[in-house]
Image 1 (tube, one colour):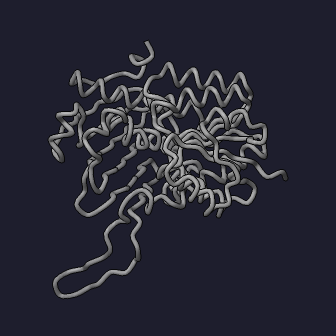
Image 2 (cartoon, helix red, strand yellow):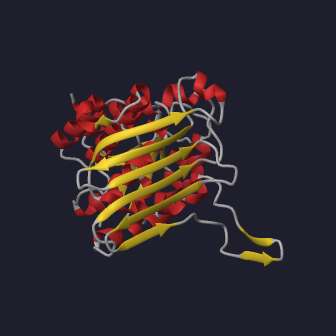
Length: 338
């Protein structure tokens, strides 16, 4: 099997993580080159991981015929345009979420990928989490029976800077979009209706920037199931990531991962570890496995496990949630397609 040559666009926190994950965990692929608008640290990262090429910009990477696939880990507002250029250059694409903040631009990426005949995988890494993947396997095997309720708790340990909302699209498009994808993934069905109630209880500056930091979202699915998601930008005890799928035959529950499973039991009570601090600690295994499956899909010419359509449909749910908060009523997904 020919080793897949990968180029990484964007060498920030997530780009560096993927570079290390591929180098250390994916023997059938190699990070051949890297680029970033900020040149600081590029040479050091390349030296650490044995990356042969540092490109002046992503266009230079696109022109390199040795590059088979690219990882788009740059700022959100560049994802779609770079992905379209990559498709036209015949490169397979892994794009971090969201692909774009507008359905029209995401659809343009999907069409470009289909026209070029290349693969596209969207960075919904939580699908590959060992806990959540186990729950999904139980749903798929019919162990839970017909799915009736999907419950997701997703709370960050601390909020981002308020100014981050201006470029991220806000909490629903930046944070909750992972939960919208997970809800669709677990239910095995598309969302038809969204009703979101949200406010700002963590940081007033986030509200002043036009965003929310606390939300309850209810979902209706095509298969008749219901869903509920609760979000907060700050949980005092750490990164809270739990799911439950309840069905006609029973329920599957995934709890938080912790540093250890040790609990101290004394006369004052029982004390155990807090959840792992944040997404880099909590989801490291999932980042590794999503890269393995992306490379495998290219080598084996199979569908990627998180497609452009998944990116589009989760974005539509996120936009419907924003509209629901603004209007104070449930919003049909069909409204977002008009």
